[in-house]
View 1 (cartoon, rainbow, N blue to C red):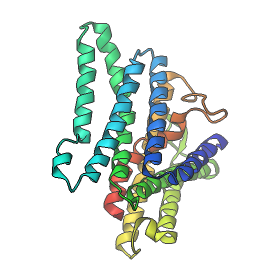
View 2: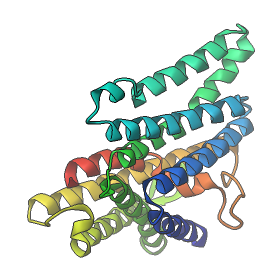
View 3: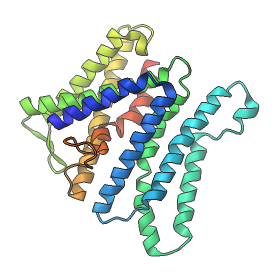
View 4: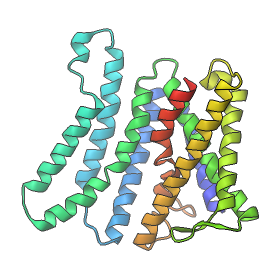
Length: 288
């Protein structure tokens, strides 16, 4: 319990410090966290007797994240110059290029072993691909940093589900949620996590209305905040369950030991794996 709470607090503290660095600083932090998570994902795959091309996968991950961020940033800056924006690649083109490179790398030596190794390598690209969603919104946020504020809202609300779920599960948990994947998760804990996310999401909107919305009104904006917070909590739990399933297959308690007493980076970011990309899209739709 303490490990999970400390890890959540650590993530939020790092983000608060990075906010002062602006768009490039936050984008750099997301890229580094994404690469660290991807590396631990490959480590877990190795413990499941898979043999991914780690260096190639990491290189593709860097190219994907930086390519999406820089291409959208250039497109935003050149929005009033069609001549320049025509030659700036978008995220779809970057992703298509990476997939093509991976396939070519797999097909050059046409051996069954090479094909078996390329599958887990491609699976590892899921992590940097998920990171491209917040990176894109940050790149096009402009001077008011609206994209950064949305990403921070998503992260704070998603991590609140972690903390709320821990406390509710410890003191009220009785019925198992998905015992085969994560035996410590309970239905009461899930409900507590969703409620905590709603409280945090509403607190941000009420106490710092200008942080996300110009004016908080009922029922429109309030209903939107509740809906977005609930979705973020659900996505947060899905990411947590996915990492638990992966660790269970790898027969590992933690994804790594880079953080003494708290596990690995993947243990910190599991709840953000789905919440950050999908929640960012919903938050922009609901709160813009």
